[in-house]
Image 1 (tube, rainbow, N blue to C red):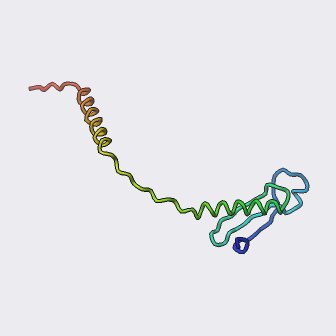
Image 2: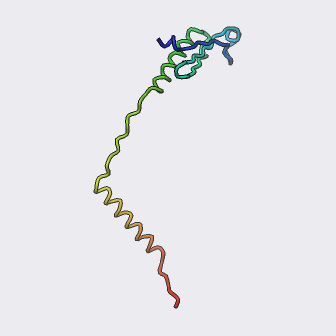
Image 3: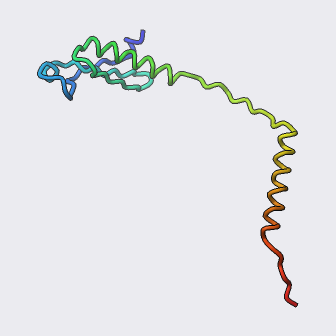
Length: 107
């Protein structure tokens, strides 16, 4: 079924591989028409192997795109944790006040 929704293009692969690779159209590009996803495989000198690799990559990419993330369930902070946080804020506030020093009023 996936093969009916895909446009298969073959082209000449670039890079190392010798004379045989420069002459044959062994690279495969698949374009999934409904989603617009493009996948390229030019790993092997064999067009059949590249085609199989490209289909595997396309299936993997489509699975990632179709995955529905689980909704995040917000948790409530326990009361003791809230109290600890507020107590720490009070201690910090006091330390900063004491660090400021004593102000002398001029009259």
